Image (cartoon, rainbow, N blue to C red):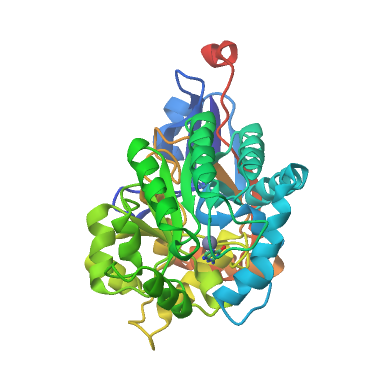
Length: 435
Ligand code: GUN
Ligand code: ZN
């Protein structure tokens, strides 16, 4: 058993924050050797039972759930900051040429190694990630995640048309490769597979049909794609699939909307689209730094809540500009505020933090598994140093309540706040038995 004494942040089932200024977190291996939270709460209430042995005391620190990134592209680590007029020229001029380099497995392995370290440096302990169309890129990322025991979901990108040589795949082989990768990796340790059509415009009818069949055959596998990000993209998708009610409707028509289906962006929606998300249990990966950088638009939080579909936060690196959940939460605050193209809101810091932890986990179908520190959750957490910079030290010292503390961290924070990222380890049976 490991016991920590520190300020502690968790979330109740209704999404409200639970905060103990003097908290206790106890983590121990379960029957299978996986480290899980066994107790979390006020030191005073729990110390008699859990605080009698060795305790790691972290004065002036905050323990919080590891962050969950609902949408990120590992092969776009080096595409961050590529300027373009909008999404489609950005894909054509920067992203596709760069992703073609992943035909070389050694290159993919080197980027995967860096990428996973960068997630951890930023306090991200669970990620739903795009790879490239090259199956070796999936093997590379799973290998690096497995080595560090990270909970990670990824998949081979499906894109058999409107894509240049070097990233375009072949319809039948792409589906064979996908199924082989599902069998090799899905459910191994903490790894999960996501069927990954890039977006409707770069897949043929046959590839989308095949993806839908795979999704039906493997109901516990995730699905990920992009939708309604940019107006030129929406027009293009409507031209290519005139029979579908809307761009989102294309995915519904091919059996690609269900629980564990995650669509990045979801900006240019009407209420019928929102209802389709809700009724199918499909969720949105809100990607605010990407949407602001590429000029795509502003996710409509009020619309999503009015109709009632699930969502959580994502970096969308490399359209997104930062791996840091703090940067993403701040951008989400700005996007929520924007009131010219939609209703403007003032999202609370607790709400923003929930969207990147327990809320994102819930949207992924992983509530009670990750993104929180309630008993039973896997023991992934971050140790935050609220005084990591002179300005943060000044500002957080003046915080009079949790909202003021969390807002100071969100507005001023980045990876310098993350002093340590702890991943739930799986111990060998021999060690687990005696602990
Ligand atoms: N739509 C299709 N592919 C991509 C991608 O790589 N990034 C973003 N932001 N949108 C996409
Ligand atoms: Zn994306």
